[in-house]
Length: 111
Length: 113
Image (tube, rainbow over all chains, first blue to last red; front, side, top):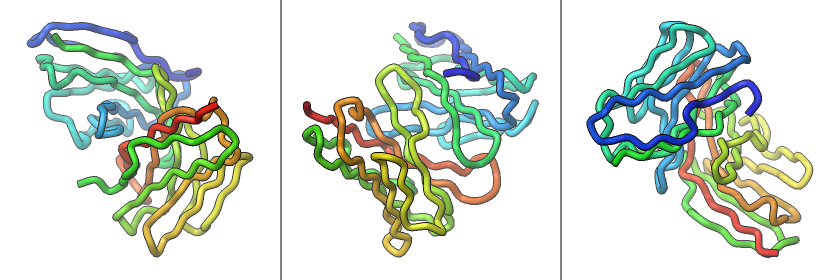
């Protein structure tokens, strides 16, 4: 979607390897979020950011870390990928507490 | 603990008929409710919202109803069209803070031509 891009769109990685997903926005929005979507669970928050270098944990943060060194970029890192982290990952941005704009997602497969 | 629940994982409706998607919530502090629509291989997109001070909001074929006493909201689509086939997520927001939007598990709507 215009204003928010995720990369890569697809990735296959091996168990135990580190993986970094990138979210880039051009909207200068303050808030950025990483979600994962799994069948039967909907969208679950992993980590979020409320400003440069300001991040916090969400509902399912174990095994994930994030960094936000610039307003426009929010990185999600899987320190040592496991099969349970096979999922579709969505980044979202927001300027207020209402109404998020989502990226197109990254489909990650851990084999 | 799921604060926003969509108990119907799927729904099938004939084209031209009404689709009703339901959502229940447990947190009485929620003051804003949203519906998102998601097509395969795309991110969720905002569809319609309602503030807790209202009980109905309408936008074209889409209407959201809010029953605060029952902690229940529903999305009505009339008439349903094949292009409406998607996964619909209900979300609820509490005031204040950055981590305050909670999603349901989604309902897959299939509109049969």
